[in-house]
Length: 131
Image (cartoon, rainbow, N blue to C red):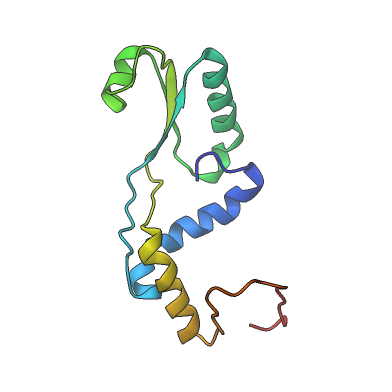
């Protein structure tokens, strides 16, 4: 979620809650892990940008933690070099294995009645307004 445009955060937050239910929803957890997302600041300007984003996204519940100073950085990012001045940690962000996730989504969509066609170019997408 960290780094998404502010306009995307409501959907990102909604999705974040759904990701924890992957096994229930699509039959696999797809190696989903909430391991956190750490954005690095290599300059004072980078750190100011991260702080600005944290302020603008504050009402969305990302739980961003701004980390500044060598001692604080060493606790979170010990492999960082001297050029790193800070960072922003979103401890609840995560990722899944796309090689497992994509086919699982396709199977779940088919089970729900979708017509899934692999290796076919998309000409258009339409919605009937009902399902």
